[in-house]
Figure 1 (cartoon, helix red, strand yellow):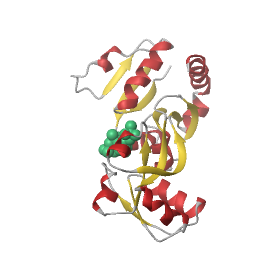
Figure 2: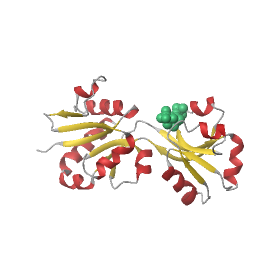
Figure 3: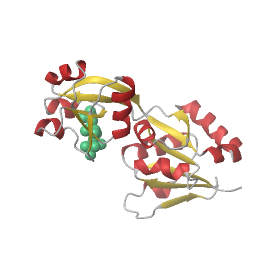
Figure 4: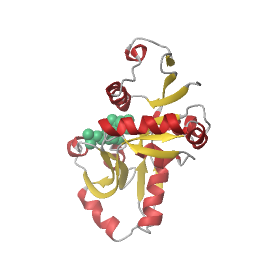
Length: 211
Ligand code: PRP
């Protein structure tokens, strides 16, 4: 039996993913050691390998088959536009992709003004404004702390993730429009899905019973 390899997005989602896998008897003790600098972890008994990667790189590893399976947020899957199968909503990491800004900016959206949109997700923003809203905008790519952009005058609005809404509230911003709902998803390499279909389908079915 060959190894099935999992790429897990680092950070918030990774711990919840490990907890979920434990519920169906898949454990990887080594991976819980926060001090470890090891990059790849093996469960010899079940013939599984796990590695942690930056979220946006997970769909890349899965598309090229370096990982058979990936666990990552739907935001990343939509943004990266990789050739992978999305097979399961894992139900955690729930949040929304929204257009946010000061309340006064809602008129600019309503009247389809040519505005600037700051975001970590240029493809999602482009798709929303051009294909759903039919509004021409200028998209400015940032790498974090997106809420700063409308405060310092870089853009009129942002396209960003809202979970509790506290970052917006504490900075005098609000949700102006909702783009889509997000949560953690399982993605699979198309070739792996064919070659290892029994093992992967069994895994999906077992996960479904605990989600
Ligand atoms: C995310 C997102 C928002 C915040 C939303 O940022 O970009 O800034 O969380 O969460 P809330 O609605 O619960 O306040 P993250 O913490 O991932 O860091 P970043 O600013 O570097 O993107």
